[in-house]
Image (cartoon, rainbow, N blue to C red; front, side):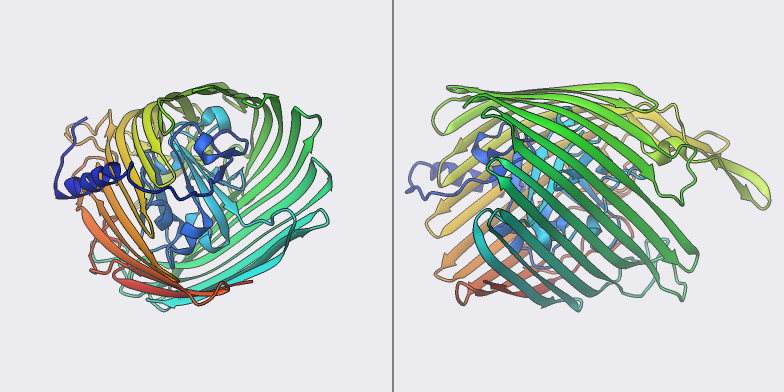
Length: 630
């Protein structure tokens, strides 16, 4: 895999080397370890997780100011994103170079990927009501089924803790583009009950989403209004027995451009996710987890050309049995059912799809050896069976050093639009000029992912190296046409994504440094005929990030640098999007343990850069937030 090294590369590698040099010379400062659920479907300490996993915790989210969830994720290694002119517009996340529809997205463990488009309504998810985000990289269909080719992103909302008195919090902030945001919530636990409620609202005047290179250019500004509500309530009716309900409801009304018409164009997006879970310790070694999940998306696009709506709902039922054979060996037996239904207004030729699944996950540690193995079978209406598996192994070379290797398979079932869109004839000047229809004979996309990793971890130093390859076959082209312009979806592409990720974090007393470097070759193995280009659309080969934070008593100061390399905006690699560098500054001051202020200044050099051709990105922008805690 060819890599090009330049000044940005050398700068990041210098920081990585500096962190390594300091690894043995600092006095340890104990840190609390995060709890991770997504990587094995059971709670684990982050240090015990096998694989390439990141946790974005509440403290990291608090520093993000006006940034969207997509902005926040794109600051993590191995993740890139694009949107069409602002946080309120269509957004795509590329995890390890996989397509936007090839990453499974969950809210509180419930899938929210659209069954009609495969996309995720990122703009309807407000980070202010999120407790943490867990990111698992690499194919994970043997844990979660369809869509987990690039990995899994699990968004976990704020919840109450056990045996904790009532506490409350709130935020209120204002920034560039006339952006106002506020949020508040409370949580607690007493007498077996735990509860939490969070609410947020935001309003922004925005900036112009398009420029004259776009066919939908309009000279107006494009803002949004947003609100979200999340909550949970649970009851521990006896030791080892808990029942709980969680809910998330997010809404955004965002402007977009549709040409120079007089009437504004805007889209209303709503994302909902609800879960009911009963967790019961049947015996000392057998825990039963019963869960019902319900998610719903609704999209309403309105412009002077009319209105267009689409949506879907998903109901999931699962019974997970966690068997603890010893302190270091666990097995989870999983039975699941997923029911997918398009919106009642849709006219697909088939209006339902059901999936029945059975899975097995084993986790074991033997002195310096750590193993996780998983296998899963998904029986999908109209397809039959898809079987996936995963095997991961870590070996402790020394108390601080771990080396590991993993192999996993993944798949993605086609969407309802790919399969069941009704026949539609096109006309030009009264004459037939092509058509489109779904293709019920499509095969699922499938992948094989292998990776190797090396980790060094102490209380003050964290270093990582991951090398991976993901080969994907039967990629679906959702709009493949013949010479008569009769179009349908077809399995015509193959892709190979190879990459190397380097990460480093170092704490020097009150100062923390972090750096990462991503080198990736996201290659389309079937490029457009007659064209030499083969890189997957809107994905860069190189991304570098640097960050530093220094605390002076109650004051915290930070700086971030990010470089993203050249990308292409078309499959033929003829439309280049130039590389860009961004510099951000942060500051926070705690007036007391209850009151603080946070300031974030993004893109301080006011760089002009492009994520999608014809669509603008934010210039230099500032956001000031006041936080209150009780």
